[in-house]
Length: 107
Image (cartoon, rainbow, N blue to C red; front, side):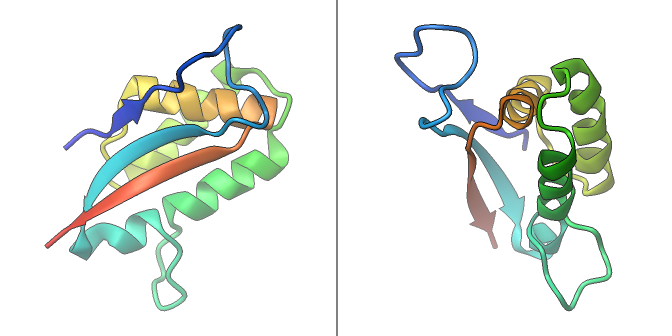
C-alpha cells in the first residue's frame, strides 16, 4: 500500500517551516518493519538509517539531488512511498526541517 502524505496546513510559503514538522504516513507489514526501522539484529540497512545519513550529509543540497537517493533507499527497502512522499522528505532534508513519519504496522 503506498504511503499517504498528511498535509501540513497553514504554510505561508512553499516548503515547511523549520519548527513545524512535516508529517507523512506509511503502512508496513510486521514482517517488513526492519526494512523501515533500524533493527540491530538485522543485516538490512533500514530506510530510517538511509534517511538519517542523507539528512546528515545533504542538508542544503537541491531537492532534485536528494529525491533519487531517497527513491533508491525506498525501493531497496521495498517500501511504497509515492513520488509526492519522497519529494516532501527531500524538501525536509534540504531545508533541515523536521520530518515525522507515522507508521502503521499490520499483522
